[in-house]
Image (tube, rainbow, N blue to C red; front, top):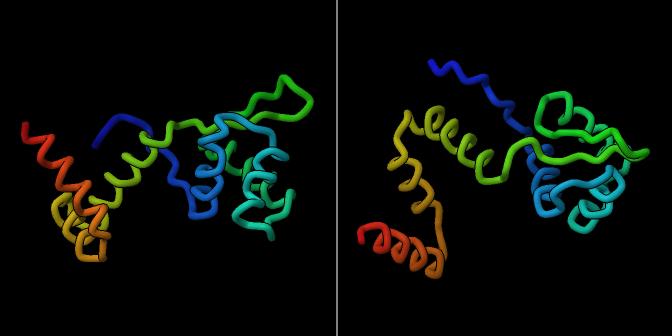
Length: 127
C-alpha cells in the first residue's frame, strides 16, 4: 500500500465540470455556468454553484476567497487526474493489465485516423 493519501475520484458530473474548467484555468461560478451552458443549456447556476462547493469540499478544486466572487480552480492538472483515473481503471476493471485495457479500447472501435496515430506513436517509441 502506498503512503500517499487517496486522491478523490470525481463523479461523471464533476468530470464534466472539470472538462469545462481546465481550459479556463480559474473561474467564478458564473463563468463556469456560462461555459457549461454551451454544451448543456439546461444546467442551472444553482447546480453549478452547488457542484463547485461540493468539489471544493472533496479537494477536487481550490477556491480563492479574496475577491467578492470566489474563484475556483482545479486542484489537479488534467493529465495528472487522467493518469490516476486510468491507473484505477486498469486495477479495478482489467486486473492490473494495461495490455488488456488497450486491447479492449482497440476492440471497441477506433477510427482509421486514430489507429494510424497510435501506430505512429508506437514506432516513435521504439526509436
